[in-house]
Structures are given as C-alpha cells and as structure tokens.
Length: 275
Image 1: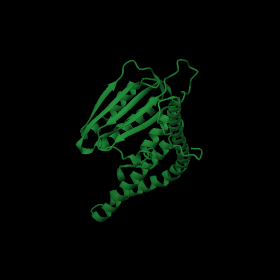
Image 2 (image 1 turned 90 degrees about the vertical axis):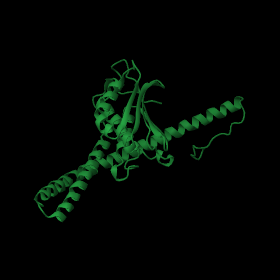
Image 3 (image 1 turned 180 degrees about the vertical axis):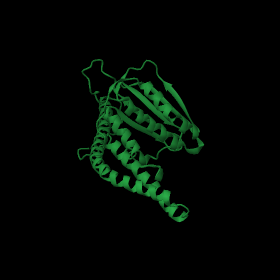
Image 4 (image 1 turned 60 degrees about the vertical axis):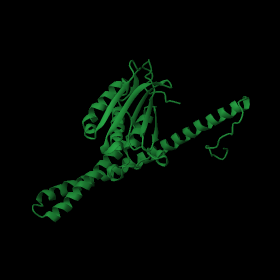
C-alpha cells in the first residue's frame, strides 16, 4: 500500500476490535482509491480539454471550407453518378468531422453559466420531452419514478438537461432495435439529490467500465465519437456532483448522479463538492 497499490485489502478474520479496525482500514483504502481515480480523470480531462479547444478552433475554419465547396460540387455533379457518390462520401464524412469538432468545443467549455436553484424533476421532464419521439422509434419506453418535494439543486438547468439527454440517448442505443425500458428515478441519498438512469440494454463489459468517461473511447463503433460521456462527466463534476456507473452484461446499465443541494443563502454561488 505504501508503494501506491490501493487495491490491497487487509484480511479480516475476527469480529473483535482488530477486525473492526481492519474493516475500517479497507473502507478507507477503497475511498482513497476512488478519490485517486477521480483526480486522475479530472486531470486527464483538463489536459485534453485545453488541447481540444485549440485543435477544434484551428480545424473548424478549413473544415467549413471543405464542406461548402464539396456541397457546391455535389449540386453540380448532375448525372455523373460515380462523381456524385464520391462527393456524397466527402460531404457525409465532413459533416461527421464537424460534429466531432462541435463535441470538442463542448468538451473544452469549462465554465458553467446561469447556475441557480433548480428543480431536478423539471430538468428530467424537459429532457424526456426532447428524446421521447426518437426513443419511441427504438421501442424504448421511459418510466419516471420521481420523488416529490425534492430540495432544489444549484445548477445550470440547460447543461444538466444536456447530461440527461445524453444518458437517455445512450440508454436507447444500448437497447437497440429490440427496445426495452428506461427508468429514471430521483430521490435523496447521501445528503444530495440522486438521479438514476437505468436501461434494460446490452450492458457494458467490466473491462470497459473504467474507460467509458475517457475522451474518444466508445463502444458504439463508428456510430459514436466517444465524447458524450466525457462531456457528461465534466458537467457533473463542474457542478460539484458525482457520476458513477454500474452495469451487468446482458441485463442493463445504471448511471447515478449525485447533485449537491442548493444552499439556502445567496452567498453560496458555488456548490460544495460532494465528498
């Protein structure tokens, strides 16, 4: 443990005071390991975010030029089917690059504006309205289990809505054409407002769970750019919240968000981070 291996555990064999000390030690090591992973992830995202901002701005202008001229040539292609097909590929892939650049810019955006006391359930309802039609086409049924009289959270409603929309869309993708159920739950836990998004999809393999919040890592192949969950993680952490994931392959995945409560006084312009 002194060498930095926080995965070690004390072998607890007795239920006496020494056993209780061993259990407390193991619990402390687990919390330290979790804190270390969060710190490494935060540092990694910060470094990638700074790089992404510069790269995205440099790429955006020439990319716009390529898309404009290729779209113009596509309109002039006429009956030349071979040329038309080639230009369609250029336009399609350029648009895909533009979406990646947009994702980079969103990812690198550090500030969170317009934070105010906000209703979590209102954010959930707004996000569900946005994705209702696309998810219905995938035969995905949304079930809401929202606790009443929840305290307000101190948040940018628009950015938190972005978090929920992303998680809901990912849940729909995970269930594929066979459809399934997405359950969104809100309640109080650990002195914070808890939001859970559970799906009955394919699940995430254990080896991938530690990677899904990393930029450009995706389990969707060419259908994803790997920035969505990195952006989600950054938004939640930027609000002083915490985002975790649990998954069972073949049964589904649950994303859990813990958001700190809005402070009763106006002096708390920034939420207190969760421990």
